[in-house]
Length: 73
Image 1 (cartoon, rainbow, N blue to C red):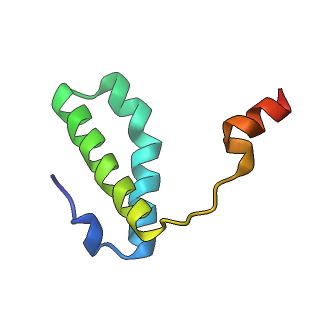
Image 2: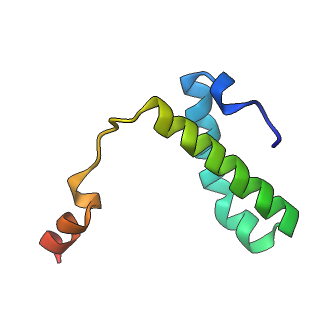
Image 3: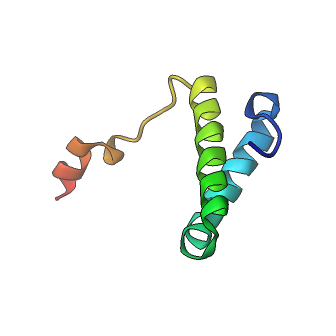
């Protein structure tokens, strides 16, 4: 893995890294090499796992649940 170990990142740095990766995902998927896509996927997974570790009780928007979608539709 490249980059700073996710557990070593401050909360602000973790969120900034996640935002950056999510912002570049489509570009990497469409135009990156196989190696670049694999690195992007691995880094994204590592950062997301760290976020979930830090925020196990994160607030889940009811509109993002299946029941919420059914209620809208």
